[in-house]
Image (tube, rainbow, N blue to C red; front, side):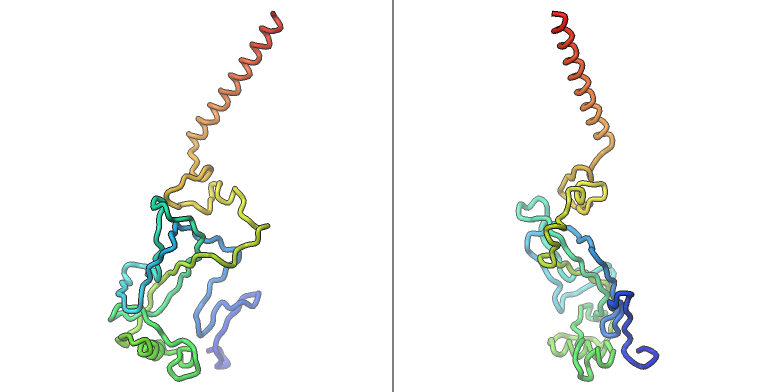
Length: 212
């Protein structure tokens, strides 16, 4: 709550919420470059009741399938939704808290994770130990909407550059991004040698023709 006892909401200079008491803190971005991943259209999900291990680091809510060698995958732009969310450390499962509503067990009403999770898990028919901890999660969202207009289509240099947006993606060779200075130097020397050879050959032919 703020000093006046109202729900605390903080905004940036443009009026966008950066913190909401009911939802937590936000990290906002404009013209964010997506992540790029191989994707064959199939996903596997972490379901309510599946065991999770906080010590493994970030828990994937969904896992995309595919790779550069399966003959089915394409390179997809992805938004990776990163969050901190509650889980049950005793049962080692994710939880389904009751977030919205005007009743006494809604998190947005009482701000008690224990009450909100107990209510949500009861409705879901899942077990809840009564203990709450938090872990880091991520979820892949394939971008198939909110696509930029055609006048903002990517240029060649967006990928064919030292700072390529496809950098680090397995299974591809990206000219300019994957450049090797010694290979480049050798290539330029070969090109220069070819040019010199052509000029010498042409000059010699011209000289011999004039000489008859």
